[in-house]
Length: 136
Image (cartoon, rainbow, N blue to C red; front, side, top):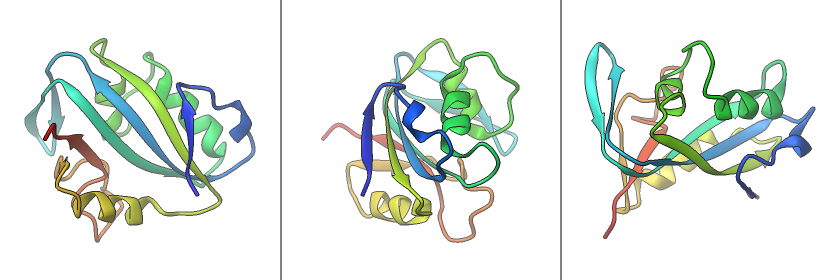
């Protein structure tokens, strides 16, 4: 089961590990660097799927994602650090590593376009863990 958190209300995840989805809105086009190439991300809604099973778990990872000021470490940091973006909601799955299952389901859905090579560096089976919602 995935619990949808309205905005960054994430304190209940302290001490817990699991997978998560960030519901991101990009208000105006931004440019990111992915595999030494510039990628334009159009304005609109995006989903980023991740997991937090290391030290600090979900609360630490989610609090990091919502901060604008941080050192760039992951692909998603280029997006979340932009003044043109906001995290509109967070979904969590406690105790389960379903990151790739969620990505696979989104790949099978015509409403989502993968940003190939984004957020899946440690994954051998998924082409992306970051998806643009396409208005139909």
